[in-house]
Image (cartoon, rainbow, N blue to C red; front, side, top):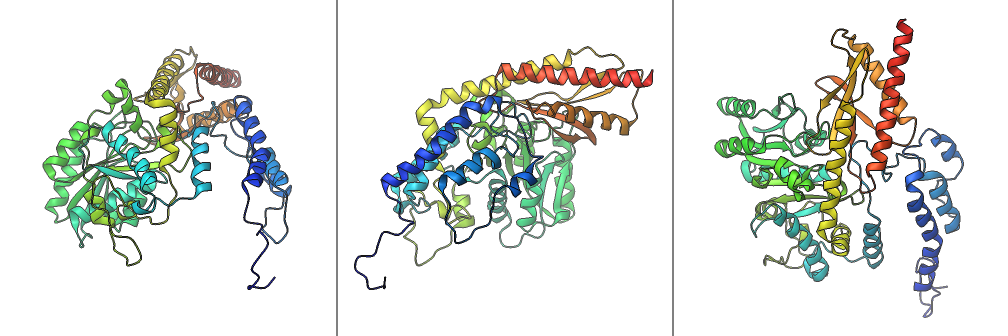
Amino acid sequence: MTHSDPNPPRQKLEVSGESFAEMLKTILPHLSTHLDSLPEQPTWSTENFQEVLSSFDLSVGEREQSLEEIVSFLFQSAIPCTFNTASPGYLAYIPGGGLPQSGIADLISTVTNRYVGVWAAAPVLANIEQEVIRWFCDLFGWPRNSGGILTSGGSLANWTALVAARIARLGEEFLDGVVYCSDQAHHCIAKAARLCGIQSAHLRRIPTDHRFRMDPLELERAIRRDRECGRRPFFVVANGGSTNSGAVDPLPEIRRVCSEQEVWFHVDAAYGGFFFLTERGKEVLSGMETADSIVIDPHKGMFLPYGTGALLVRDSQWLADAFRVDADYLPDSQDEVDKTDFHEISPELSRDFRGLRIWLPLKIHGVRAFREQLDEKLDLTHWIHQQLKGIPLEGCKLEMVAEPQLSLLAFRIVGADDEAWEEAREEALNRELLSRINAHRRIYLTSTRLKGKFVIRICVLSFRTHLDRMRECLEIVSSEIRSLVSRRAESKG
């Protein structure tokens, strides 16, 4: 074939509707089996990764390969060799359930491949995404000129907020700017400060109380000290549910400090923010609605697939001032409040149509279904907390290091009051306990350090996790604690 051939054959990359339907027929049985078998799948299975890697040629070359062969490898070998974050027993880190309904939205958006970064390119689709942002803002009772963007997650959202605040509060000269967060802040805050050009010596970590909540008085003292030294405090990050312990900082008191000191009040509620949909969550998170900016992650509290975060700002003009840059090849900017060019209020020009994966499940099920799920997670967390505290033990006790404020708790076994354990021995026992719990592969827990102590975490935030799995969690945890304590007693005897 020459370039002048008036009738070139159909290229292999051009898939007809019929061929695409056949491809879906190949994939759908695997997806259906995966969903139906999730309750019985192990919560993790990564130890055989070398065997999996050697079983299939992952390199990309000229040779064609059948879709069935590739998909079979993915579902039978590659996907099982993971932490099973979609499992009802996945109680580790911050679970992301991955609503299949959002998978339908992603299929639609990627196959149709419309661009929503510029409003004029897809006005109705851009308005769908804008409607999602509007619902988020309305959740906190924010004014009509509030707004925001959908991001890949909390890390990019926190960085974007910090950039907007730096430009709004410090202008072009920012090397004397100071950022404040608690000693329990997510590590992405430090990363965001670095990427934003803030000196590492100007990131202040404020001490926390016995519940791992920021101390507002210490915050105020730190801000005053920096001002006296000629530095410019401009950004305070409060936790709306920390990753370590689920802690919610005293938001009204921090708001007061920020107002009096004229600094930006930001709430990182990537994990906990959507509990604001519930009455109990709204009470715990009271004061979050007074923030200048909020980060929330739909891939956490709304159970959506990973890669779905959001930044909200009280005044959308702050984002425009930070990120609007003109280019001759782009259409004229939209100035009407109901027409948003997302590329002008975010660091991204090329981006996917993220709004549909949120909007579609909300339209299908309504907000109430999500509120009920979140209420259930609060119930389950309260239940497992009470049950764990009631486990009878001899020679040791189970200490609730972080009692639940939302749906996350942390515990460890320690020596009885009359028998303090050596710190190294205590950590070794708790590490062994975690390993024995996870060896069942029915639940998966993770650890962290709180005030220097090794602790085991339980985070309940999957739409597939219900009382039956939490009962199983209790049975596994309690039996392994008793076994460990019994073995220790026998070795002493």
